[in-house]
Figure 1 (tube, one colour):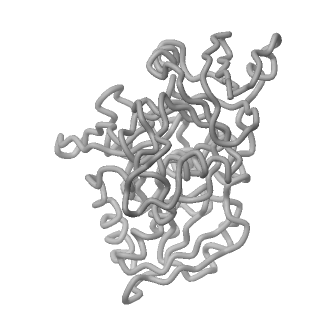
Figure 2 (cartoon, rainbow, N blue to C red):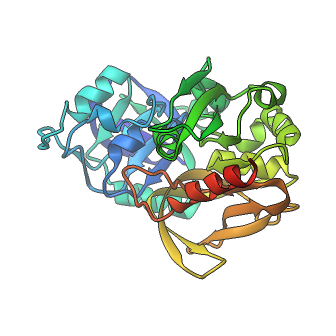
Figure 3 (tube, rainbow, N blue to C red):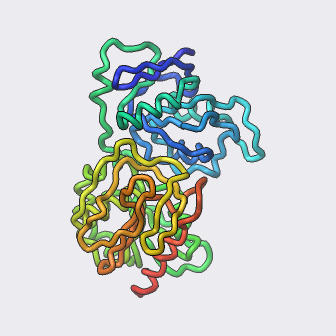
Length: 351
């Protein structure tokens, strides 16, 4: 079936449709991962976005449910070529069948290199997956991602036991959390209680938790004014570790600001420089906003080796740290897993 990817600047790319037979509009972003498309498809941080893979063939190892990070939230999927006959001993289905089941439309056969160049030159822009090219692009240009965190956060609390001996109790504020964040904490002896994004500071402080985890999530961090107000009440009260959106919200709560990047950082090959020792880590990332490195009471930990944007902060007086990248990434490099150990040390020091 013929499908078109129509960009907000009027560019039209003709391809073939796969996945769900529906039309969609969203913010078009690209990710550079060579593998890990399952984790991309199931990352709630892509809410409201049409995701394009720069790697030319996607789906060759099929869909493996055990590798899911969360519930799919993306609004569309664009690839150069998708594999109709995957080969992998863990394969549980095809990419096409997965998208159909989840109601996600896809487009293949388009020039993803050319589309990526346009985004890199012009910045992230809206797009639509349609069956016919529209005469009026207003519905595309007027689109914006709204209410993203509320759409993907869990509704009720859930406690997950530690793997092995329980040493600590950690509250995890779910802004669209990837599953491996909780797994990394549980592997380190933490019982993790996942809480809705709008849980009050009073509930968290009365829960007997040793620390607080702020998860990744979608959308503009500045839209979450209520969350930021609650986080301000928690600063200095217990150890805090923020990842991705959690990193940005923590910076806002401490009096910093966030900015939107031209086209963001998305993929499993983003270089980050450690400001303490000069070492460069290869990290997995998915974000369109960044925290300004000049945050009151914070010391920059990492910067992006490509564009110099802030990638991590530590708050010595508040027993808090945060990272813009994903130290828990699966599939992705595990260079930065030591950040979970730093958080555990904060929990131990606070006992």
